[in-house]
Image (spheres, helix red, strand yellow):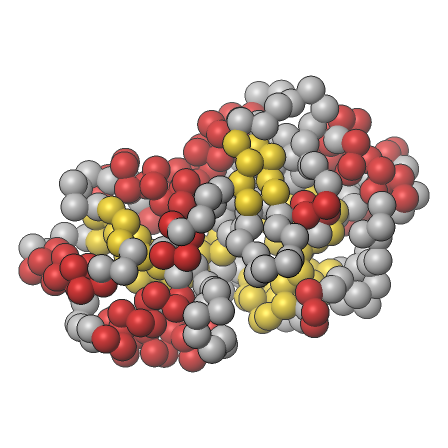
Length: 325
């Protein structure tokens, strides 16, 4: 299929039509997904709307190779994991699709990346191989119109100086960082920023005590002297990202959709403002699996945005013990 059409979606009708087309393709050509659907007793002819589509539990990316028959992986993105835990592996057969996805999503929410100096404070990701986040941020840095764009590891004092110089020059800046590193910097080098977007990607990675997002953002707002903290919501198993501009709610690009499943009955869905498990349709995952049941808890708002509220206890998906396939 012409994957460029995925990123031309503009209406809910077009999204649903494309999602159903991709579902049929993945049922036919993705052995793991088809096995899962058959286990549920899914009948292809009865899948006529989004809520009829089965969502693959995200844990399958740890135990099985999720890829369309006939495709070969161009790169394998891997998740971070603690010692002894299995890590997720996302076999990506076409990096061009991933690049289209993150470039178009960034432009959708923030405009042209060439207008920004992009600074990245992602030490835990830089220290390992196979991070899809590092791949994305590296591409944004290279496309940025500023030679000072780049990664920072432990040299946060140098980063502080860079930020101050960019502020003095009135240059639009994006500082994207993992939560613990941004907290370290905000506490050690508090400052007042006016032209800089601070974007956290989540995660303490065992370096600091976990904080709820509202408390994290309160500390970061105070330390960087900004009115709001932006957030990026993505994961190894996805090729698309959702963004929050500081109000605590995330929005998806037109080719991505979040649905909230019931925590006790994963085949039914919650109404708006009700907490449940987060299911994600990511049409950019056209050659792996576009329909994923995550281990995150959240709720949808009336305006179509969604909120992340935490994770399932012990990262288990209750009521859906199908990981034995």
